[in-house]
Length: 530
Image 1 (cartoon, helix red, strand yellow):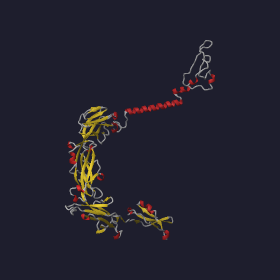
Image 2 (tube, rainbow, N blue to C red):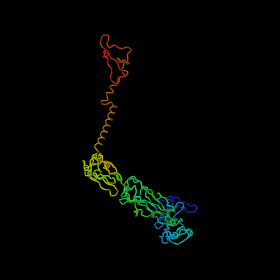
Image 3 (tube, one colour):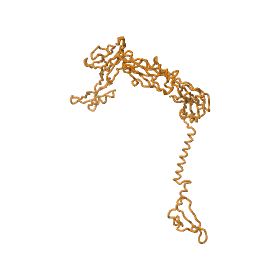
Image 4 (cartoon, rainbow, N blue to C red):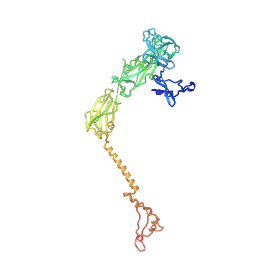
């Protein structure tokens, strides 16, 4: 049987070895039509035979898997061609058109590479133009406008194939590439009309439509970007790229239709609803083209605003920031600082526009109540139009967890109350984080005492203990004891009984008032009682 060292995924393959001892005339096993894994190269295998209760090992053999997979045409950065539905693969070379509308030879040339996975490495390469060999042994080829409209392939060999059977890549079509560029936008027009106000200000909840006209070949795409006041660049909150809103400009509406036979011109729109203060910043559009797989080529850059931008300054009522309230507390410190983030434009004016309320006790900046002090507000440098209010607590006590803390902020557009859950911020504890507040502990004790009392009462009732043993004494007499008493079991007599005996002595009437004995009401005369 074959034995494997180091490579565990070959166990199933080796266990399928065929025994050819009968046909060979001596002990023989063989592996036929094995699906080889390329990582088997370098593995050591051997055969082992059982003879007379012992084993005999063959000399070890080192596996050398030789293969060559289908080549692929890629660009200098290793990116493959663009796949266009119903058209196949495309690579693009730059086309700078002259006054005659033709591509100039001075345009940048493009380097393509024949990428192939093989062992040993491929040493022979061939390039094919429209299926015909055009060059010899070289993994790279540089092409220009002369290849526009042609197809290109590459083939490779590492000695496993004959010259006429070298594996070839898929054919890639070469098309002209005119870098996508921005023709015009509507930024300046928008800033000078409603709903924009002086200083690029715009009220919250307004709707604006940014527009850009771009041109390029292949069909360009538009990406909308926002540069926030802190320098962070993010995608604008509108559809863009492949999912953007586009309208193609007809040829008869272009200034130079003779030069636009391969160019695509589009009007792109970014619809924005100004929902909050995070919409403040500088907006711009980038015209982009995918000339290969990977990152598109864009103008202006996706990371840096171009020469034309739309500045937006959102104004409206105060709002709570995306950052939740937090607490700063040193491990062994008896004090803490609560920070609350809010946004507003125009900014609230202290002291009356920004107030901390602790159990309905209002604190302006610099004021204190018990162990609470409103330190002040600072501007948040990372978020536009946002601020931080700080409430100092010293010392922190268990009772502080139940305090009702609210930050009240207002400006000319409205007001906002931001509640702060101090117990959650302090982590369920204050001076001693593991201890519970007094009222919670009292409630737990009260519930425990009530449960214990209920258990005791039930136990006493079942066992007839303590005061509950009277229930047994109130039990009615049984039927055997009834004949010994002058008892009438009817509730009413046939005739009224006189209240005086013939002797003139009154009869004493006794009635049982016990609820337990009420089922056996009876009359006893003095003569019947011994």
